[in-house]
Length: 223
Length: 227
Figure 1 (cartoon, rainbow over the protein chains, first blue to last red):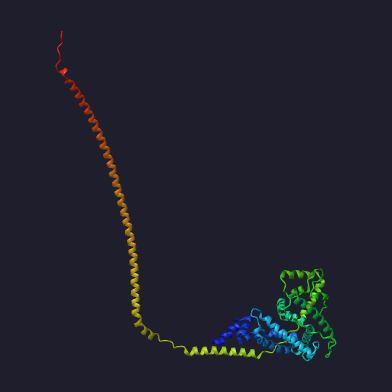
Figure 2 (figure 1 turned 120 degrees about the vertical axis):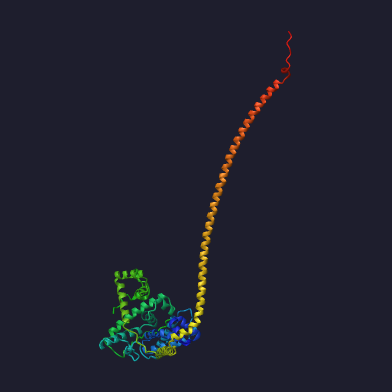
């Protein structure tokens, strides 16, 4: 087996994220970078989709995340955790996207049936009957809308803990805030989300496609 | 979905009357507590209705969040290409190796011809090796026998020497005892002789005294008496 095949095979089998990133940083190793992309693409996509509520835009943001990772590879500190570095890049892109959306007013975060709705993209269980599938989609859409009503800070904590399964300590490291603050934000996020879901459930009985929330939530800085 | 009965407690401050704080409930709900702390909090939930209601509300929120599954991303064309490339490369390598192995394998050799070719070269070498091995074996055997005989001879010699020493010793002792007996006899004879000599001398001495007395002149010319 030639050397050109052995090296990527060894990289695939034995490299940790930090080692792979070091190779990208020092040797611009494309195989190591491809390995990182394969490992992290789905998770970064999940973060972007839940933060922005837009699955199409999330794919673009995922691609941009890895592009930015490569562009800023020299600023990665080899002794730090790779995942922390990656999450920060992805989150910053999500925040930029949310601000861009708000500035341009492309959609209301509160419009459950807007054009950027990912209603059609929600993954549903193929087995249930069509009416159950519709119910699942509606519920998913409710959750998506309620989540988008949270502030950036609360949504970030909730998405990272509940969906990405990061520990509170790891979230604190990513956001560079105390662990206690992360937990407090998480509790507040859960409480607010509960409140928004209740409101939306009551609203569901009178659907209106052009309803806009007169008091849209402000997107604030997370750091 | 339940309304949260303790929205104030979600401020991040510890609750009143020793209730766990919202931060601690987050640890509990997301299983980041050690087992003993979890047990303690479970115990508190059993006893405290307000905390129980709050935690149940949060659990409802967690269940609601799980109803928004992750939309499936479009598969990356790059990833599929990479796998396809590796698959084709693996097949090519395996196929090439198999074909090469099949066609480059040598034909099975003719054993009789091989034997006839090897025998003249191998026989003298084998005979030399056998002779050498036999010589070495004989030498080892002889040395073994020689060693055994030498040991036996040495033992016999030692035994003979020992017997001779014993005999010599016995003779010396006999001579010694004879000498002692002779000495005793000689001493006895000498004492007897000394005694006899002494007796003779005493007799001689007495005779001499008598003789001396007899030979005195008074005794020879006695004087007449004057009356």
